[in-house]
Length: 141
Image 1 (cartoon, one colour):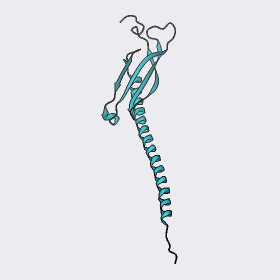
Image 2 (spheres, rainbow, N blue to C red):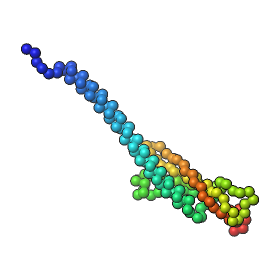
Image 3 (cartoon, rainbow, N blue to C red):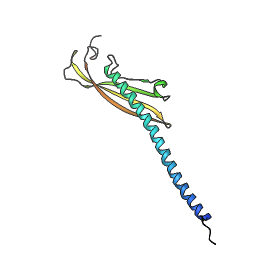
């Protein structure tokens, strides 16, 4: 009389195939979660960078030609340390410029943060119209 069912060998092969499939699935899931976390950090930094660039574009008195920097509070960054550095330089200045003449000023903003033990960073550029003052030209007060 013949019995129905699976042999021990068939059960072992099926278990091995299932283990390989689950291991591959878990590896792919782990990679996806790491990528999502990295993108979340990048998105947060990009939003903060846009906010800071907007602030710099409308600010009236900023130091020119020198680097100035700051950080955001951990309550804003989700507990991460995210900082920035900015530098204002003349971009396009007409020849024979004098006080009262408009010119283009370049704002370079670099954002940096730690992710996975590495420092990540990116740079934004913005331009704004400014008017030369006697102080900009090194003339007068």
